[in-house]
Length: 227
Ligand code: SAH
Image 1 (cartoon, rainbow, N blue to C red):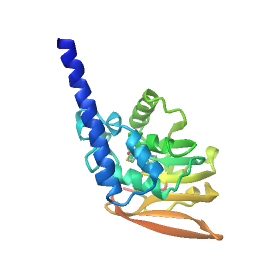
Image 2: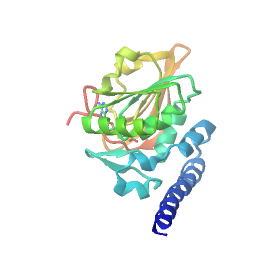
Image 3: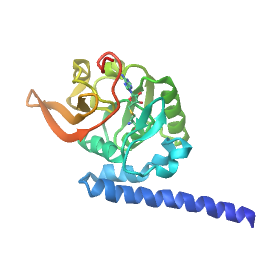
């Protein structure tokens, strides 16, 4: 009897999280204009609760960032979806992610492209993300510990570079690591407020598109913010 009760209890919690995830996709993503069917499917498939410290798991589908330790945050679901949509991925791309953090966006990207290369500068978060991603059998991801503001030269060029920490400007080394039709999506601006920018080449000239205001934690490292 007791065993039955426990298994029912667990099932309910899992069902609640699945229902909350579905609501998140409808209310936070579709209603705000995310329309790429592949991005919506990836956001439906990846369990954000697995990337959170256990005490925050029940808030996994809330509409905002949450703490993941080391004074860093997991991004708001909408921001993850917006960055992925802006990156315009069809499935065959090699993508560089700068700022692995929890690994949540890494897992979403892994469903949208061929291979993800993700760099994190904080050792504890890098190891934590590695363990979580391995536990979910996500095989097309390579993680590295280091300063991502300089990119990942050995693996360049990339079809897309996505940056999940705020940068004061667009570092030239990152643009140099883009494939000819590549695009970089990044929050660019002040330390408290940024604009989500996509930059890529069109007809031989750099072209920028803007996706609204956002607020990310600061990028550190060579091309990050100096404190
Ligand atoms: N998309 C991640 C966001 C994590 S927050 C998620 O949803 O979990 C941004 C991350 O960028 C932090 O983990 C921070 O440590 C990392 N970061 C900051 N500066 C960096 C740098 N120069 N190189 C690599 N990672 C960096």
